Every structure is written in structure tokens, then in C-alpha cells.
Length: 118
Image (cartoon, rainbow, N blue to C red):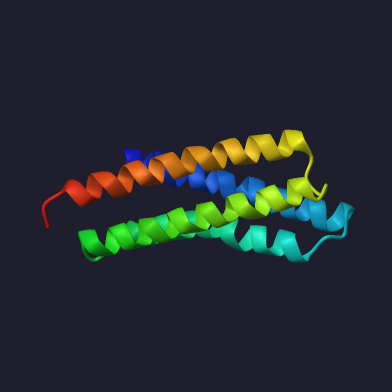
């Protein structure tokens, strides 16, 4: 159940990241930071999807850990975009809150899987 919620939330988040990328790149002509945001922000869900078909608990934890790292990187790019005035505070707050929610869910999922017997 939790993985399904995580999968859905990460997909919704990726769509918002794509929307943000398109908006900033077209209105403010910023391409370098937004491209990095696009890559890391959409990679979260991609890794969660990969974890669905993991070959073992260890493989599952590995994929989810990569998603967690991508989420942390996404936070970095969001902060840079906000602090360099490319991303408005309202949009930043929405995205950062959703990203933090994903981080909490990923940490919980990883920790739960680590407790499961091999």
C-alpha cells in the first residue's frame, strides 16, 4: 500500500517538476539549473518504479536509496532556483513540501525493508 501511494505521489511530483521546468525555461530563459531539476525530480519516480520489480530486498533498498538521493538533489536545485530568483516562493514552498513528504516516505520504506528478513 505504501509503495503505491509513494508511486502515485512521485509521479504527481514529476509532473509538477516538468511544469516548473517548462515555465522557467520559457519565461526566464534559464536552462542549466532547470535541466538539472528536471533530471533529478523525474528520476525519483523512475527509481521507485524500478524498485517495483527488484530482484531482492537488497535490490529494492538500493533502488529506493537512489530515489532518496535524487530527492535530496532535487531539494538542492529547488533551493538554488529560489535563491537566484528564478522560482517564486509560493511555487518553491509547494514543491519543497512535496519533496520533503517523498523523502519521509522513502526513508520509512527503506527502514521498513531493512528490518525484513532476507
